[in-house]
Image 1 (cartoon, rainbow, N blue to C red):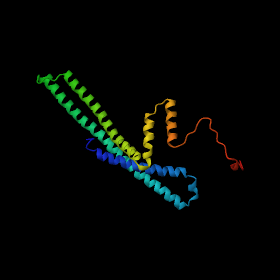
Image 2 (cartoon, helix red, strand yellow):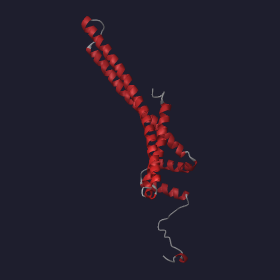
Image 3 (tube, rainbow, N blue to C red):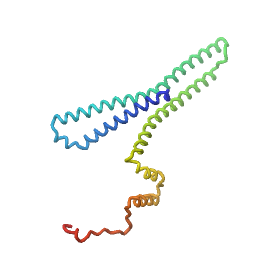
Image 4 (tube, rainbow, N blue to C red):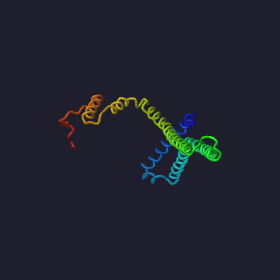
Length: 206
């Protein structure tokens, strides 16, 4: 069920991510320019408010769709387990009655309890497995988005730095060594004890 609907899950999660990015950008712009909005006319402020409300409605709708498709996968597994669990209880109960009443079959109380315990554990771990699979679908979208950002032409120069950050240990010597290498790559090397002195012809007004 989860694997057959993974493309639909990906598309809805991607749509929610893109709309969330747009909505967050609009919210950040309004927050950063809050004071400047008082200089706008009433019609301009109303237009900005209507645009923000419209983006909020579109984003909330996409968020609901992505949330519902992810929760629906888990609900389906719980529903299937509940149906089979009820059928097992009916079968076990009638089999136990036939054995205790008429001596037909071999169902006993211990056997019925073992079946109940098995179905309970299977349903529990199956639900956990489906939940992990659903979360992995969302994680796949995030990893692909991050990979796409790192593969952009403007960000390719950061690949080496990302690799170095993953290899650098937490000790201070490794971090200082890494920064010195980065400085040498950029032709910026600051030695200890270096003093910067302004030329004499640039000291006027200082």
